[in-house]
Length: 419
Image 1 (cartoon, rainbow, N blue to C red):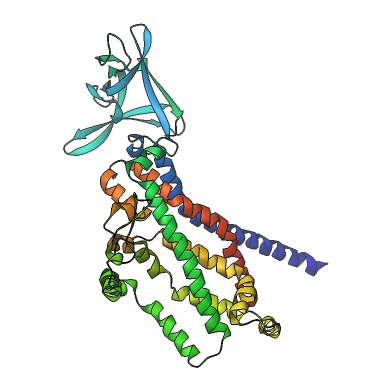
Image 2 (image 1 turned 30 degrees about the vertical axis):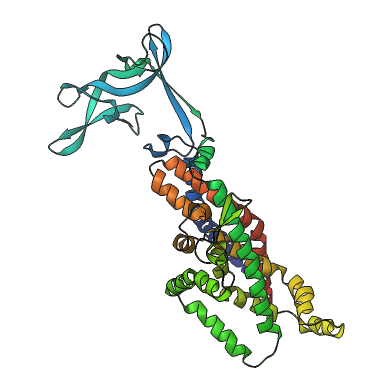
């Protein structure tokens, strides 16, 4: 009984320590998660503000519309505040003066609860705060409502101003941004390229991974190591050679086939420009470099190697060849790995920027990332429209990620079980 009583405080203390450690762990994760989400929330908030509200100081999270009214001529009229001044008396020396109302600061005493007013003044190239007594405030306003006094500037007592604020998201920023530049055509371009690259890369990577994981042929492992070594070459090293190859390709193909088809401009339905067959300004140049991935091949190969060979042997006994085994056995069992690769590929292709910027010189074929960069160059000062454009470009990625995150979780769980 004595030993149990002695051990009881120790057990309670260990329990408290475990709870504290777990609480700190979840707190750290919550803080990290908040730092990831806050930039997106700020982007969304800015996209719903007015041009003035997007750059106001101090900034606000919720888009609001502030309207100022004043009692003038016995009625309430809408006005625009031009300047607000305050007549004050310094409490330290009794001097009376006039200052901008924005220079007034209030501070509540800790124990008495009374508010003291301070004014920020410039003295000897420095800003000092001195205690003051507010005698009166004056506001210079411009009347905005229609009538005989429209656009008239008048001075009114500060206490006659009425400030009303309400939540007012500017949903019109999105159609305004959409119409500034051809976002519709860029959406089509990006969707065509992204879908083609995703399907093509999943197909080429799965075929190569199946051959390297399930088939036996001389030099297989050396070929795989050489293919894997290409992941160590930076993309900037091969950028210029690949660019020269695609630039020269149409002329070489024309010479080889004795035609000018590969340098001719193509139009869909006779009016929609769709670029050339190959070379610069073509969907071919945007799609083909992204169809092959050493990382995707490596990931699928490692997954295919974990599949039991008994299923493959049973399929061969039933008369299936390699292609039928690949399509009817391996691919259905690898849906998690295929979905993960497809999601990664889709997100990477949707964000493609450098290669389209280099290979294209026509407005009709640019993808969304390049168009957003041009939008920033033309309308960079309009922060609310720029953030709206960023949300327009980002929205499909959010949808794909929300639908594909369960495959990430399954892939992690499956990898943990199989070691």
